[in-house]
Amino acid sequence: MERFRLFFLIALGETVITTGTAFTDEPFELERLLALAIAFTGTVALWWIYFQRVEGIGVEAAETAEDAGAVGWWGTWTLTLIVLALIAIAVGDELTIAHPADDTTLGVAILTFGGPALFLLAQLLFLRTRLGHAPRSRPLALAALAILAIATAQFTLIVGIAASSAVLVAVAIADTVREDDPAPSRST
Image (cartoon, rainbow, N blue to C red; front, side):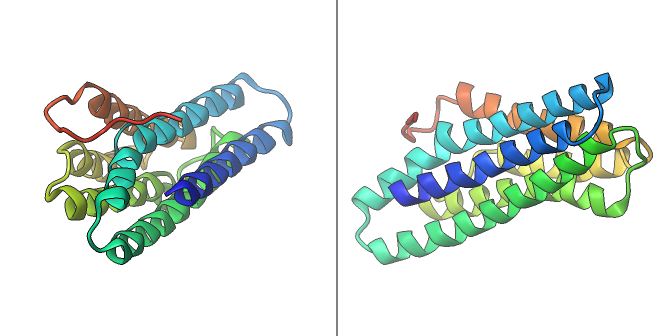
């Protein structure tokens, strides 16, 4: 599980580097600074979501599993989907930071909302296999991302990342205040 954690942190770090580079590659503008702040907030929410609940469940599952191979298999697939999600999120954030006032295109909307959706879907599948259920925050967030992708299509790119980041922050908050799940909470 330590390798999964490190791989996730490396991928998340690449997301931060990508957004920072996108900001420094263009002339300074307040709207671009706002886009950077929103993207960074979304990245912190991704980190929080992973380490607040799911990482601890994964560690416990690996330590107590009767079939460590199955846990490793699910963990590998989950991590693969999460890394793909982080790549999509990083590219969507990069495009938005570079040109926050541009109109939303289908491709950027897929990155901006599909990346977080894939991240949450991977967690939902993992949690369902490990716990027999998943927190309501995951399917609710997936529905919210789908609705917001359609609702923000007529606006600029910065509106899209603000909406998707807000959903991620809401999931992070829900994971933090949720007390009825006996899942362990681990921090790094």
